[in-house]
Image 1 (cartoon, rainbow, N blue to C red):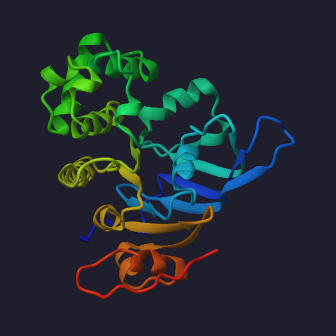
Image 2 (cartoon, rainbow, N blue to C red):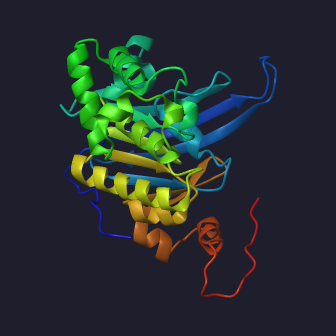
Length: 291
């Protein structure tokens, strides 16, 4: 863990979430039961800050990330709460009030998301260039094709890929690590102020994971975007985060400075998560269950 930027009293938050509730219908009929996946979540994200969302599978981490950009699947809905985004010029955006046209402009240009599963995020029959061009044109029609090529090449170089080769390739012609780098590059095409990364090292071998973590660390330092990092890997969260939020059963049960969370956790569930990480220096011990 290193000393990352902390929010001071001066800057206004990039993102303010208040009492957010997200529900999923368990079937197609209105009378079918509803599952509350995010339950009254509130937090602020500051310029240049990185918040890690940690917790077990099914605790609501990914759903929260999707809700922030209104990308929930069909059976999901934001039942209540507010999401306020502050642009670079100081004006604010009520994300839940945006119509589809303005929401499309908001995504990628102001806030972008890197999803789990690099291969599943691409169209397998289109070259990388076509997919980057489609992304740009969907969100910024003012950019010419030549400018789009130059921007695509620029962001690929930023993630340490060779633009000429990658732009002409199909997704299956790239390794898993290269595809993950391309996804990160695509998220930065329109220079968003906020980036959400959902388990970006999942399904990668250990050496490739290390390279991706180092890359994200470097990009965050150089480009100074605000970041929400969804992970069940506590080591990655400790390395990349300014603050850590522990989620359990749809709620943020503890949130604090990364050092405080890992060295002085206050909530029993956070302590259980940390104790569940295997070490080579301690004997095995029982981890208490919750729920």
